[in-house]
Length: 535
Image (cartoon, rainbow, N blue to C red):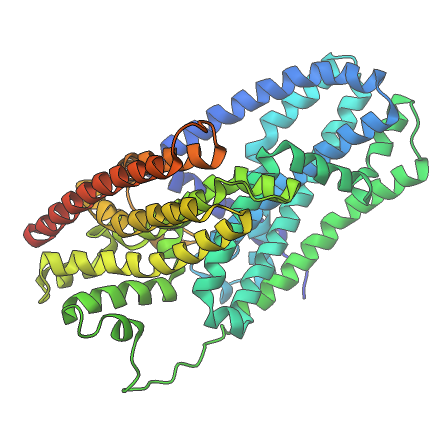
């Protein structure tokens, strides 16, 4: 491995930053994201600056343990924030240069990797410069003093760059594992779904749940991440170990070039490694999943539409990644499970409805735009509007019924839910699972979306936000009666009421509303697909 050329590295980094700027300013959506992000950064900066003014007095008058806790919290927060988003960006797009075949035959890979890493550091620096300066300015103006502010400035910059290097390196490791692992290549859909669900849920839990944050901070204060606090303690004159402070300073500064070298090495392994291709032996007599479930029960064209949807999700999980969003509503319940080691009584139905909403949206929320470039072939194929829509509905409902049943029954049994209440909850979730794809397909044709969006470095057509909103609104109204009566039953808020009649009435109302919404959505979508004409 050779040392990168500075001129070429600078040129590649500048080119990447220009591409990012043009991508943001080239579309209305990108411009709005830039303006919204800038406004959010400005608001956070004002809050950081105001908080730092009072933090200075808190540090100078506080106990050494308090100073260590506050310093460690800042280090862990900044390192985790930068590392997490850099990891995501590297896996999605920044971990491989645009037009890689042309660039890597023109310049050594070390120059390209160094340029990408420098560009990523530039993006992070542009986003965090104002907040860091606000923090440092608040400390300097407050009681902390100028010397503490200088230490905070240098430390923030070093931690920010270290988070960028670590996130970039972990992103390259992720891409290398995805390319070289036969297991990941063979189970890409399952692995992608699990990672897409676990990582965001973990991040939300770490940033939104105070108890989890406190426990993580307790662990961090017992690790080398707390050693830089000795530098602050020495500057304040309230204690601190000079040896630990020196080790922390040298270690942080040494990790930057060491991490950069590791990133260059990983880039060479990731970019030049031939992706593992799982063996798929063709069997002319093999029966597909749709053959086993639907053959002889629905028309062939409808069965092919369902099989197409499942096959596409298996080969390109990114096309249905948006459907995991309903599971984010489980964060509060998962917090109780982790911290109190008890399953909340409302978790079974909440998980069942989240599963129903996810499978309902996965294949049906953008029936026209989801066909992308093959839409003309779909419209001229020998499949009716009803047959096409039925195939999409079956693609979501069939696996949804199985997963929702297992999820709700398992959680209900673990939570000790009474049999009658559990049965009504299961019926509610199954009604939602069957109705959700039909409601989604109707919402998708009301608000279709044909423009592609960049998801994990790929241009993918995802459903419209308006379609999401209409879908969740109708589905939420449909399941509200049964959900409310289920809540009243498990919480036992009105013990004088007969829970059986209460649950039955809520379920009947949900069946009626969901059925009406599903029929209306299905018929409207079928007619729209049958009469749709390309401009």
